[in-house]
Length: 406
Image (tube, rainbow, N blue to C red; front, side, top):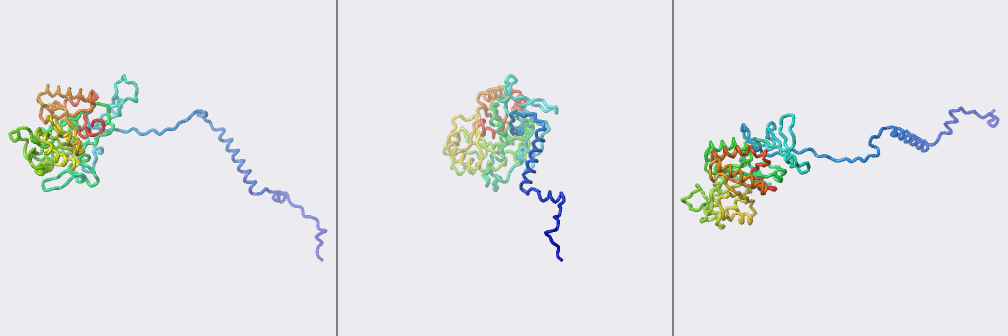
């Protein structure tokens, strides 16, 4: 017969079964676990030493030191070969011959000197550190992007991207140099290309920041220009302009004249500019008559401006209209304040250079011109060696159109 469940004794549960039936739910268990974790973590953190506890802490980003490169105030012993067209001036700096102005002597023999005198205690007033390199080769000319090919030869032109020959053919002068408070001197020696020996002497002897003016009448001009650029020299084209007393006083073939049709002067200017490539601007050779004749001067200056060049005028013409015309045309123009070898003797050139230093200290910057004579090259080369200790910067002509040098 069936079992009577009502008379069956109750089954006794084990301890594990009784505990399992009394287990907490999932949410309370999770809350207890989190509480235990926070408690344990707090105890662990409290045992970690904190040496800066209670002290204010400021975190700042410190920029890396920037090395500012400019050309040398002393000539290099050995010339370097022309730079590859794909290299920039910064790529070809000879780091083994770098000198520095601003700092201290390093163990490797590199010279580092403070720009400010020792009695100026505030380091904030010191100039930027300026690295001085004997060679800063410029690219081989012509540079295709800023060159117009013609039957006469290469002509400068503004590139499709707006890049100008002035920019393409100029030395790279850092803003810290152009905006520096140090006195700056720009020196342009002309007559290059006419005498191969003297041109080579100037290229090999003078520091790279001496700008060289090439006449349009020499032989192998492009080769000579590229040798000069490989040594770091910026190049200007000397354009013959009508002087007083022309034609008895004749600067040379294709001289720009004051009494001809504008088309004739433009054709002559194009021929002169096509003799070689690599110049960042033009400078006058003579020109006392043309430079005071506005109707003849204006078309010439307009052509120069349209080709992305700058104009530098020497100090031989007094009543010149070039500043007025250039301002109207928005042509960058600078004017030299003296000719250093008007009297081509060592004492006279040394005296002129001393006056140049005083003018630079007084005005901040100054431009002077001279000729590529033996006596001028030798005197300038010796004088340039003294500029670093005098705290004077020798800068290429392009720097005169930028920053405080302008």
